[in-house]
Amino acid sequence: MMGHFGFSYIGLIFLLLLFVPNMLWAKRKPQGYTPEKESRVLLAFERTGEVLTCACTLCFSDFNWHGYSVWVWWLFAAALLMLFYELWWIRYFRSERKLSDFYSSFLGIPVAGAILPVAAFLLLGIYGKVIWMVVSAVILGIGHIGIHLEHRKEIMR
Image 1 (cartoon, rainbow, N blue to C red):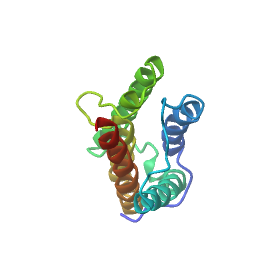
Image 2: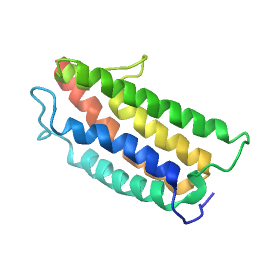
Image 3: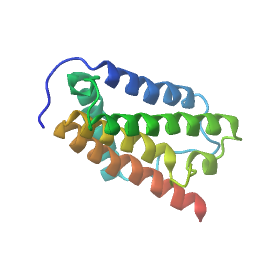
Image 4: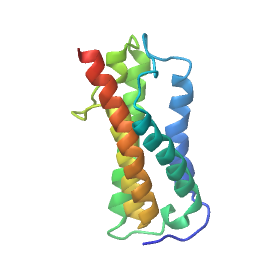
């Protein structure tokens, strides 16, 4: 449950799937986007979770493929959530890029741009049986999902 130190190529793939669309987003932010009103507490959770999740993702070899077992379903579920995350981004980039597009739901999942990657990393932690990843994803989720929910609530007013 603690994890084995070593490079994770699966973790690298997950991080690339996370970072590439976010780097594209930096140049295509939604109209009217402003991070100034974000809760400092949620922001602290988000930043801490980002650092811990990235470190865990790359530094534990437990996320690499180890053959078929009942645990592989957790990896498939995590990969499916990352696929949905990429599809959500495609939909966002094809949209008018309004705030409502950025905080939209996808396949019935509210604020999918926040929930899908956090859930994927949580499931990756379960697959690898790395408690540090599970804890990191929960910390990230509190901040990242919380910030997205606050923004969504604000634009719905």
